[in-house]
Length: 294
Image 1 (cartoon, rainbow, N blue to C red):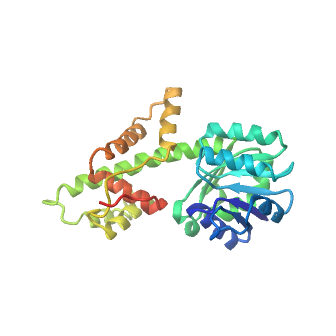
Image 2 (cartoon, one colour; image 1 turned 45 degrees about the vertical axis):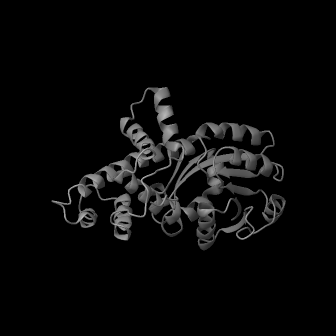
């Protein structure tokens, strides 16, 4: 298996490395000359065996739109394009229909794992035709965590399903981080009674019903900066949480916890909240997202 990757930022670069480690040959293209393997999309297409598989790992929106239109000019009928970024699921049908005019196949894949994916593997949620999924399976097996395939990979449905599942995943992630953050703020407010906040969270890591990877990351962040003195309580939202709430509103599905987590992030932009410092620290731990310094 030999694939191309377009976009070698924090995620794309680590994905290239994990695939290579697991026996998949990768040729990458990025505008940054320090990380790219080839100088142009034309050179990328020339380097890949046909029929080609090209994985796009760039920011959602116009950048993804432009890359898909540009790469279509250098690909051929029968090639497969995989959008592994955080595109909105409604964009997938547009991209699929455009590429179909050139007889180029398309899949969408939600990718979770952040900056830890190189070491731990990535959770993958695919949308597309079964034949295309089977064709790309060596790539998915190279990226996913070790162990049973169905615990790290799902063919969720047709085009759009992968990004839809990832959207809901991120909405849940918002709510979970908010719960941990609020718990931190409450414990931290009782220094008169709780003398070891970091140790209290650490004690929950084994045996308790709330043990999780996010808890482990919160402990790591607290051990590095117990009071989050170097982090401002300002938290961005990357879009998927909003999209989750929008779709829930359209379908009259109640998602009060996810909605509250989104609005809490808006609160973070109005005052320096201890709980929002915890959310900012968690996002930095699992995704390498930038934090604002106090």
